[in-house]
Length: 106
Image 1: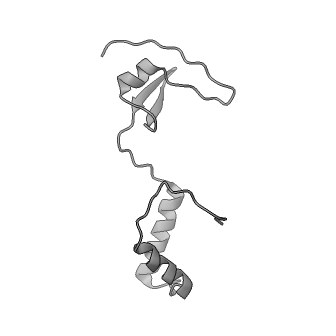
Image 2: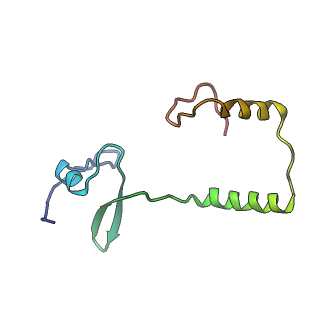
Image 3: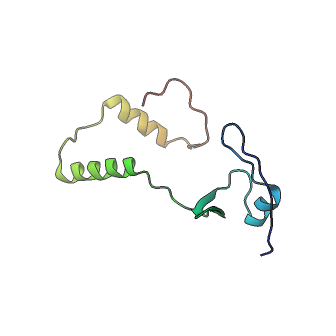
């Protein structure tokens, strides 16, 4: 691969735009992902292909849940209203990009 030298300006929010020749060389476009690796005083930017990000908090929660299910602890039936809502959702296609309407409590 030929050497490409491009300069990007850091915004007040700490953001940069990858210059077009760099995006083209990496084969990334809108929505594509890149990884930044700091090697000494250099930053290496690489295209990310199908990398699964593991959230340690979620992984711990799922392990705890799996342990409870296996042992039968802390398990109860779903409330009827929730079970009915889940069953009705199975019958319609799911669009993960669909906007969420209403309040969401986390």
